[in-house]
Length: 304
Image (cartoon, rainbow, N blue to C red):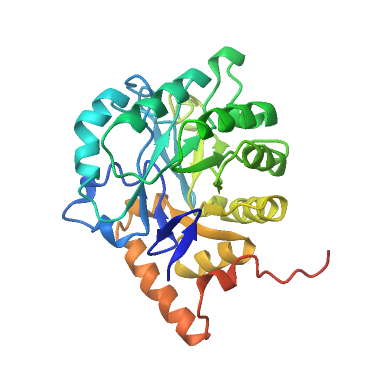
């Protein structure tokens, strides 16, 4: 059940979503990260971040809200303390990068390129606010998306994946900008902006008031955006958002995803990647599908 993006071959089309599997070692004794198609690490930034004050997680109907705030060690400590353990993994490792301005992304990438590391690529979180542009997220601007992608493309030959936000006017245009900038693939979607209020205190359940909604609640939004992006670009799409059973993976693939990421459900069952891989293989055998790629974009529309 191999999937190939650029020159990288994955043993499974199922990846961990950034932030939901930590750096891999956090699940030792609970799950074997090597059984996944790949591990996408939690975000790393140029400088250490403590993240947002609590409360920063709130459970919702069919999902959860979070405003963690990209809490992480910073890239220097990441290279010293995390990369050595990542190098021991047998699965493919993709490092997620975030930043507050273009230079943050660039400098973080440069440092990661210079370290002795076996990671095969990067996923770039462009949902971050650009402090030099009034706080507007990088990923809501076609121009900024292409500019950032292009700058990073010139610095690495590793796999470059741009992670798209659904909180935009036209996600197809952002995807096209990433493609024009040299991205090897796009992942869609990041979390949807949401809010929850405690009716007794009348205060938001998150300290930051708003947060990112993930989980089953956003699956139809994710499917629609994956399909829109698939029809707009000629690079692979990696689907994210609300996967709870193996049939959801098939649905994402029919919509146009070449691979998928599992996020929120990892908190409930960190072994889902292995379970879904087995179920997918059985589905393929039952339906005489020799190559998982046969499913990609196979949706039959009622009308065009």
